[in-house]
Amino acid sequence: MTTSLVSLYTQTQPTVPIVSGAEAHGHLKVTLIYKNREETILDEKNVITLQGKLRLLETLYVGGSNPTIRTLRVGSGGTIDPDGKFPKPVGSNLTGLFNQIQSVPVAYSIDATYPSVTYVADVDPTLCNGYLISEAGLFFADDMMFNIKTFPGIPKTVDFSIHFEWTIRIS
Image (cartoon, rainbow, N blue to C red; front, side):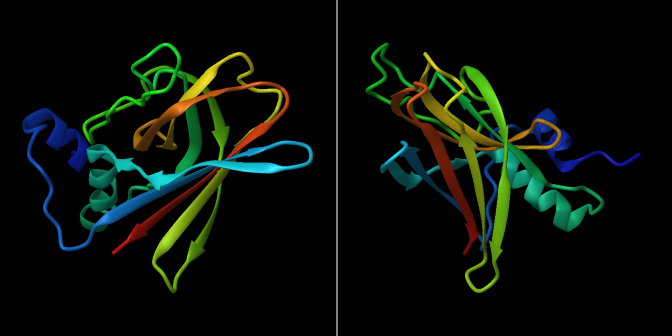
């Protein structure tokens, strides 16, 4: 019976860092889309979780795993204040959002010239209304979180959708 690297690692030494010559980097752009205009409110790097990095390595060394990212999840627990002005700091040891409220499917495109994949997802005008959206993450098909980003809260209303464009590159 083969034990996955993720399971083995988290059971034995959950604080040992991974050292590698190749690094995975994430960048998130968040745009509010209204009927007659768009407003980019975030364009920053994110944290790729330790479990996400291990999943990538597992596909190289163990094989047979399918590291498919299927959903983007948003939540309302990404700030330290009730007004949503100050994002919580995040570390790579997180395994889920602070307060998940919605999951949406992702589409992706690959850029082979600049080794990267870009995931896109939209929280449409009918979803998450009345919530202060302040965190997002990409999740594998088996519910393991790949990355996370906290940001100042977006008071979601029916007046707009939220477009997420998340680029992961290897350098």
